[in-house]
Image (tube, rainbow, N blue to C red):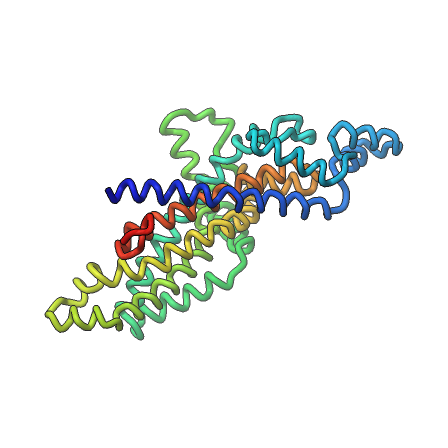
Length: 330
């Protein structure tokens, strides 16, 4: 019965997400219209200049000569048909380009979330259980330093130390394409290339979750239910593992869901520094090429990804805290 209510809850959240995604699509489309230049002017400029007639022909070919509202209506119609358009700059369908870059970004984001959330929870609990000790001070200072250090600087320093000086990791790319690795050899090669980008992107979020987990654990250890558990004779270890940890995880899960959008933004910097062939690097290239179809497709996919992650967060909430209502019932 609870499974049926959970299924209805997920379906309701998916239906509620549809107008949100459409609103994001419309807003992104209108904002990009404010950007100077378009694909026609960029292509004409790359050709060394072109007469105005040729530029107008390009605009007509790309559909840029129509009024903005007409372009928006056509784009929304295509979105509903799951047609993200054509990238004239790359001479390929937008969906094909995005799918080719999607899994490297998901790999980088997944590894980052596992390390930052898992490491942040562990370090936060360790700091809270040893509050005002050397462990707490060391973890807190390291977290502040990691939080305040720019991502690009961390990436460059990691390349300088571990790639150039020590030669432990490659400087860029996702795999050694000239090695033609297959099977487990390719998996190991990709994992080897993944280490430095993941560490770079994880440090900021690791510091954030560490501080949040520490504060939440300290708050929960002072709650009435923890005091009652101590009065019953439970040890601090048992109280932390059975009661405090589950309640303290709720804000961390919430923050992880909220930070997915920021994680996509941070991946642009990291993918540029490490030449990681993901959506971030593709968005960076399409912006300078004024490839708005491709840019809109990336934004649309990012919005869908954020919505899906937040639905997953809601489900995790229900699993962590049974008191949360699902389907209108307790």
